[in-house]
Length: 277
Image 1 (cartoon, rainbow, N blue to C red):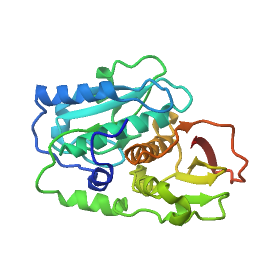
Image 2 (cartoon, one colour; image 1 turned 60 degrees about the vertical axis):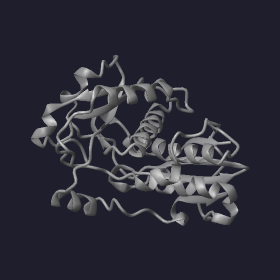
Image 3 (cartoon, one colour; image 1 turned 60 degrees about the horizontal axis):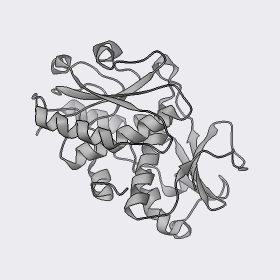
């Protein structure tokens, strides 16, 4: 199914918004998101649950997670999933699809992971025992004027920078960078993957084109976050969402599958996750 918004335009417009107008979403607006959530799926067959949450604490400048202080937001989206294989990747995939939908409609969002105060939100999530609840995003109207702190945080996180192609995409092995010409029609999907957001902008995904498939790996560069959750697996799911949406928009053949580990020599920091076949 093709995306309901222009993929490249929306991806390029998405940015982390930390300052919001202090007004809540209307019932009609919330219904719009509830309806879109019903249409969401992920290629890993994981049941990802979403909740639209309200938090007056955000008005007090509560510090939520690694992206710093969120100010003004009245509404948040929480995502959870059972602790199964590829659950974190599926959660990242599905929530990023929802985030991009929000961006296309003109709303602000900001990925928050690892260090946000779970006690402020988890009571409303209706979590089952063992459920993963690693991330949350505010959802609201971006403030016209950004706070100086916001610019400092973006600079510190290198939010506007992305790794070059040769650092992310490879051909046959991790020693040979993949050229855009060799990627052919998939160059667009890979470029959209390159632009995906990630925790402290580490971009922990690596993709190897090997035997007519694109194999996705996690390049682990951060320690596991709170509750021993590997947030970089969420990041790889976000990147996969960009790839999948771009491929769907361009009618590119294939689908995501988890295969036997490809016969590609890797370092100990590199972990195979799934493939586009």
